[in-house]
Length: 289
Image 1 (spheres, rainbow, N blue to C red):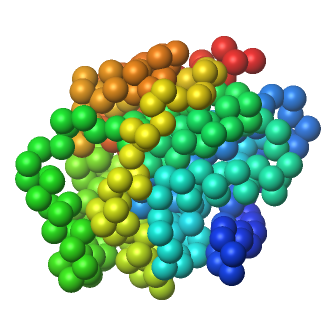
Image 2: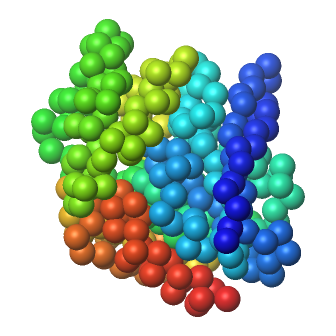
């Protein structure tokens, strides 16, 4: 039986005079001959959001997962959050663990960060497995959503809305639309997502995408330098990022990417429909081996 992972930490100096304490975990045999996997969570997420996925692969593969700066149990400084910052964290982590090459498994914002990292470091990424990635939206965001993000982006209203949603009730209302299987949105998941919202500085990281949305877009890297293996794994019921609108945009960015749409799954596909997601990831890893 795999041992329960323990929290590990490193201090990341991400800019001159600025540093943050980052949490990560590692799993699986250190002597595995397979390319290591790095799991990167999405917006508002944390390592634990992969708790139905990593155990399925840790007996054979060396696996790493970390909390992005500003999320989970990682430190939440008042800095300019962006995909570029998260990509730099991936680079710092690979340097820390002396990893020459990885398979990057990312969800949503974590997947977008992985794409940006692969764009700048194509030789260090064996493959990208992208679960409902964000970063390209086209015309998928309706008028009301744009108005809402505009309100959240304004300093005073954003802080008021953050206070209103930074509790279990608000988190429950935010998580429910990202799941097809509503039974998965249980008290454990709600508390898991609510706890980091109480941390000092959480308001800075959580409001960043609405205050500086351009910092979380991938439009600037077309064409993408990464030409390696890539897969898009999408929940058919994702109403925020509907696959029929968004997948074609990502295949313009990554023409080599295969696309798989999993039924009865929404935005948090890896947790919402974990068995189907794990089966697809397993096939991908077998193909890479």
